[in-house]
Length: 411
Image (cartoon, helix red, strand yellow):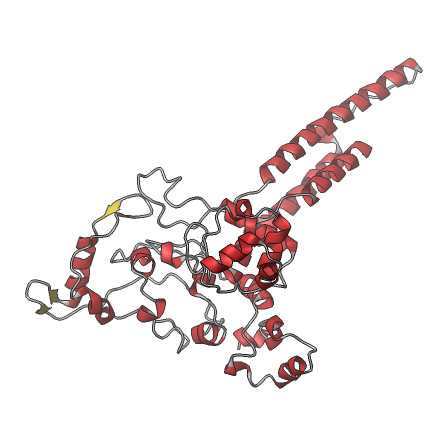
């Protein structure tokens, strides 16, 4: 028993000293960083791949993320060069991020593969979300297995030594009870089976109805990477009601035809499905013409149009209320926070699990532009606290506005 307790203690100590969690970092990245940064692509700010190597001191990088203006004022050369390179636009401060949070974000950044690599189908990675890096879980598993083997060996040695000592002293040793007849072992196995079975049953029940990574095949291959990424079409051009109403709206065919009356041939980079099959972009445009009844040669509509039956991807339960305008307009939440790096997706998949825990965690950590946004003028107490300097206007979270109350989403 002493050996077992020692082994458990060693495993616990190894786990406690574990590396940063890229899974938690992914959530923090989407909530705080994705609006200005991508991992392997320059957006408003620089690409973040290899960011740790560009800073001489990791502590200085932490300080930069929390308050870039203070680091610039300290005279650091790299910080000032970076500030000047990006037109002297200061980085948004994140004073609430702890060292652990920043390390988790950095771990996630390091776990994201370079686009186009790692796909054995001959084409770029187009659909699947980046896989989470297991961190040191494999190492912990190997250590646990080794310690378990050592524990069994030591227990066997201890048993043999006791037997030899008893024989030397002339004591009679009864035959040991076989493992499969030992009541203590049988009871322990039953308890373990109940615990493991209960865990997987609960996890399965919690996941009922969720469809993270769901990527259905659409009637027309529409690439967000081509439209929102390469051609930089604003999300609100197609989903115009996202900041005005509850629903983001699937654009009608006439919105597509605003451009495709003139663009009848695809000349961009090669397109691939998630399975690696090459897609003929011009043929997909022709499918649009067939649906709307457009004759590109004649330059006019020649037959009645038919609606495109798109397959809905993001579905919430009927008892959940979600309003796009409240998040996009009032909360200034970026599309990527919920939908992932949509500008890099050829085929759209459900990025987040859209669970209650995921939403509540976002409400607890997401800060709002409280002072500058007229939508929050009704919160008199918080405004008085900010006026009396009891609270900073940059520290108001959705939770402080009642964002974790049940009736906000369920009524």
